[in-house]
Length: 260
Ligand SMILES: [Zn+2]
Image (cartoon, rainbow, N blue to C red; front, side, top):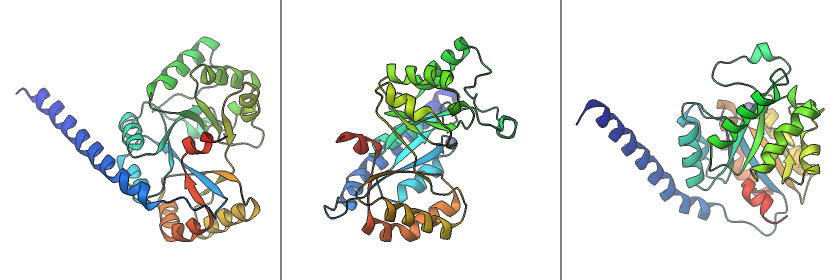
């Protein structure tokens, strides 16, 4: 066997092993999270910014609750993570890079932001690549975008493509001035918006307060909460999930939109 063939064989073997491990665990995941008829609050928890590390996915998986993962396209492990997550029973979103207000601050050479600085053709080409890169995804949410989501013309173009692909859209609400949700709604897209960035403040005590306040104020509702694969976030969830599960059922985004 040539060296290249050996490497391809090895990578395929590892991928098959990972996928079979996660699909075997899926059955137990379903069993571990029975839906209680007494709890009216449903939480669709989205983990943003996946794509760079398989370790993040492993930690999310170990929480043993149904979640949604938002994967930035074209990163090192984007496709693998999307497929393993879907096989594990999670919903998958394309985490679409939209221009933030402080563009210089967030500058990265790993992916390009969709921005009003680009021509309509350039935007269409980027959108085509991003929206076709993770075929298993059921929808899109925005990565950053505090500038882009305030721009009705730009968001109209982005959301029109999302509609054509029959994807759902979650407005991450990285700015209160976002027009994305409103435009998505007017186009008849299945849409909702983020109600809480769980770990906006990187402190487990603050996370606990914020999520419980949100549930207190929104009983008998479906909530969308965004978290990030960070150390303190996992720490908070591990220590508080049993308490939270008494207050609310965790659901995937697919379930969120299933009975509307
Ligand atoms: Zn993000």
